[in-house]
Length: 212
Image (cartoon, rainbow, N blue to C red; front, top):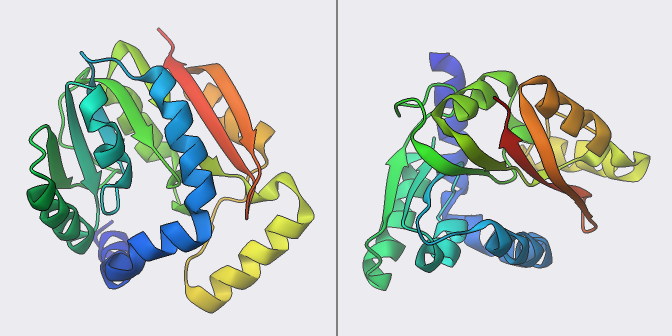
């Protein structure tokens, strides 16, 4: 586990200073759709957890619409940049933390809403973070997992493989949308919404409820 953590931290620490520009240039329209859809699930009383926050793009966009947000990332450099932006914006209800999604430090049933945006396809063993997410959710909690599903068509699968080899930004899990949602259901989530978002790569915007 320690080797995996260090490898992930090293890659994302190096990428942190370019992260915002990368999102804006390559995934800007996709993130606009994600944020537009997120609004429908937000409530002023919610305590929210985000897994893989990067530099805080999502928390900064939704913080006025919820009670509190704990935004986590495995990269100390990503969190450092997020905290610098938070200080400049004078936002008080976001708590940025360095956390490993494979072993979250939070108590059971802590959060009303968990967001894991564009991270599950990058993880070699996504089942463990999914179990952790379910553990820290309240029994009536909602899990939102926008995820690139490059297995949806052959073109995106090939392009993602080439791009990963050149950049190191490797998509490990090349799910199609059906396989992705089936995997989530097998871990005890009930699907509430599935939206296919076209873009550079097909993305599944998935909203789930924790099954009892």
